[in-house]
Length: 172
Length: 105
Image (cartoon, rainbow over all chains, first blue to last red; front, side):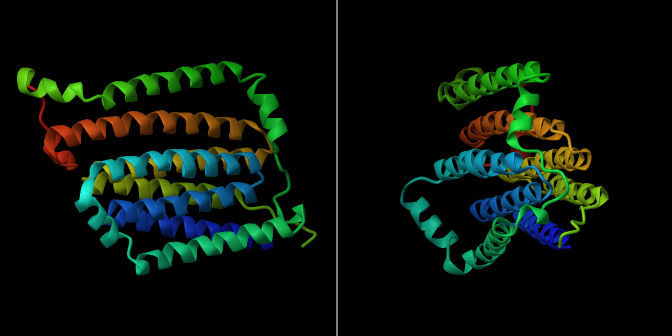
């Protein structure tokens, strides 16, 4: 019963913050709501009995990938105008709804950590089982994923360089 | 509380479908490239959630492994997508995707 309640609460928070993220006019506001949405889905994964996936969701999605978005948004408005923009965008009242949603999620995770594992779903698939599967039958998939990440690295390095801009005058 | 009710798989799948629809709506409606990339993230997250829900339903680790593969796809996609975004911004001085709707020649 408790578990169902936690699931539906986290699901509501995730859907609401995703909707808010998609409908914001301002990129940094949308980013904050998107992070709340990802944290909500991490709680859902935890409740569903996938603690390792929940940790990866927070670490990689809400941590690493969202930091890339933050970097790009910061790169696109530099200088004094950028500072003014930041001041204008991040007004205190803007923080109310994301903080509220985050506090709800925090209360959920504190509750989950305080109750025994009975509140979780029937089967919990821990990191050990995932690791054994990952480096056993799925080791080829791990290799392919590493090659994909290498390709992404090379592509991002190439696309991020400035010399592509210089071709505009001559060849375009 | 001792009798743990399990979450119905249909509700998890429904949630993932709703999230995917929100992301798809964002991709179709928004014209700013940053918002399109964010909506793509929501869609990929919804796909990953389907695998987690299915893995939890059968109690297998395969769902979480697919989640990790989707995570690496999302990381590579975001890196390349943001690089493209920077190029578009340098060329057109705008993030409006409709300004980049012409091919060369």
